[in-house]
Structure formats: structure tokens, C-alpha cells
Length: 209
Image (tube, rainbow, N blue to C red; front, top):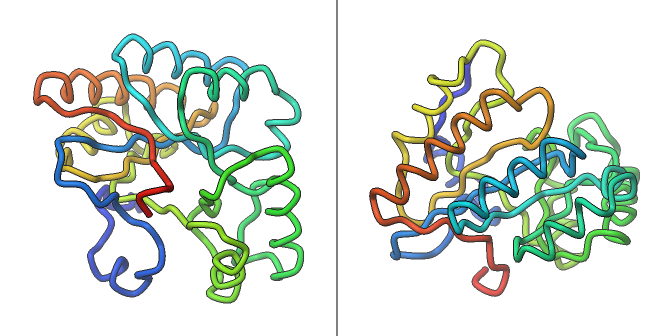
């Protein structure tokens, strides 16, 4: 089953303490990337963003930050936002609370950010409350590109994002091998469309949350 691109409104009502879109009326959207940094794919994304004057937010896996510190530093040096995506890409539904929070804390030692995104979007209520208590903001998404889905081709992936360009919307991509082909094609098309429509691509600013 292919998950719809736009997050259902009912879901955002059920979990109001999670950030589903940014509070802005300006013509700006918010690109985000999960599962990096990747030694080959993340630089391709950064090059593309730079060529369009776009900013984004990268939700990084702590283990990958440790393995590829130079790529992680480039994300920071080029003015993008970073967020915590746990140290080992844990599924909160399948992990006990103590282990999950320990993994987030381990990632926080190398990822200095208040922003957190749960891998797979899966997190228990008890975990979500504990994360808030630790000072994190849980960032979800408005538009799921589906770049990781083998049932989608690049054109279909691009259509999912191109049909949902609205102020404040958070777009979720992955700078990972499973998503590479779809992601790079859809990202380029989205950046081109934003330029034509007069939209800016900005990073998530935790000061606004």
C-alpha cells in the first residue's frame, strides 16, 4: 500500500504537540531529509540545494554522524539545520522507553539540536512525553515524498510533492540509498517549481516553535 502524500488532518489533531507544519503565511516551504549523513548522497543533495539557494533541515542518525563527520560538518557550514534521528534509527514502537531515550541521548552528544524526528514516524506516547520533558521539539511532516517506496517511480514521487506546495508545509525526503533515484529527481523538480512560483525553501527554525 502506498501511503498518501499529504498527512491526514485527523492525525495532526490527534497529536497536536508534534510539529506538522511551520507557522508562516509567507511563500516558503521547509525541506527535510532523514537518515543521513551519507558519504555520497548527502553531498549531491547539498550541491543541489546550493545551486538553488535553498536551505533544508537534516535529521541525522548519530552513528552516521560519527562515521561521516566531514559530511555532517558540511551541512552545518552551509547553513542548514540539523536534528536528532536517534543514534541507531530505532523504531519507537518496537523499543522500550529506557532504551529509546538512551539512544536519543547518545545521538545528542554529537547532534546539538532541539529538533527531533522519530524514525519511521513511530513513537509511543510515553516516549513523546519524555522527549518533550528533555526539551526537544518533535518534528513530523506535512508532505511525505515517498522517495523510499519501490512502488513509486521518480515521476510519481515528483508529483506527490509538486501537488502540495503550500506555505509552511514540511516536506520529507531521505538522503539514503533506498531513496536516491526518486529523491534526487523529485527534489530537483520541487526546487524548480518553487523558483517559478516564488517560494523560498527554508530550514526549520526552532525559535519559531
